[in-house]
Image 1 (cartoon, rainbow, N blue to C red):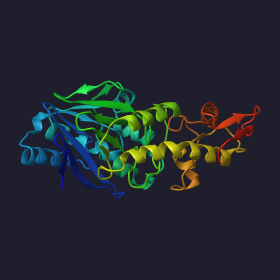
Image 2 (cartoon, rainbow, N blue to C red):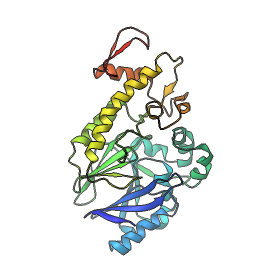
Image 3 (tube, one colour):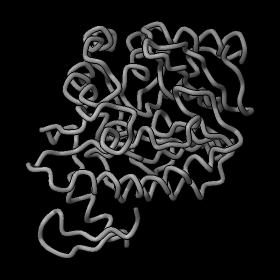
Image 4 (cartoon, rainbow, N blue to C red):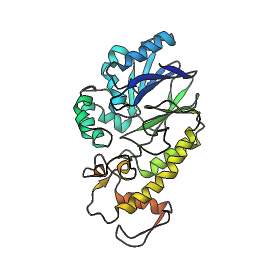
Length: 315
């Protein structure tokens, strides 16, 4: 069942996806009402309307904004019937992602499903449920959006998928992290840096949220975490560089100029066959970029001109 998390923040339970994820969204109820993520079924927004009317004594017409953390089917399929359920709502996403979402099905086929985690046999079935076209307004990262007496601060994290944003509701101090940080394992199982960001922007964003005075870490596919959310972010930061170093050490000596998916390379969660891809459109962290980052942060020293000519300072 959907429930209240804070006076103005409510968790909407959309249900379990085919992958077993406990998919949810969040309502922020102020003078204007905002929804974060739209669910994995075409009728997901019906649950939002039911909760608004029966539990909050508000109407569907009160919802002015739908913020997208990212554009996987669990977050955008519900937009298929936005005009039926939430007729006044504008859809907002990070500006580079908003452009891509003019044709969501094309975007998903070209980009999102080249990442580990989605089996190709489900591709057509999932994509055919999302809208053919969407009108999405792009927002700028780190610029507040006001809902009335409170505001939402979006910050581009570029982890997990293209244009992934995290939202901070200052009044409730709730941090809506989409699928970028998983709270249950304290491992960076969703780390992937794409062309909408960089290693530096990823670390900088984690620094910002670690220092933010937040009370709850609110993922899309898990229940909110009220106790150890800060440790999740801190552990991701600490392990991220170590994973980079170990992954690079394992890769040194491989030939070719392919691009590498951090998520697949540095964690054992997926098969190594996912590690190497040819297309810069969906994997943009080259080995050289990672090495440069390690040198800049004092974790490695360049001793020559070859990829193998590096001295690593941590195991």
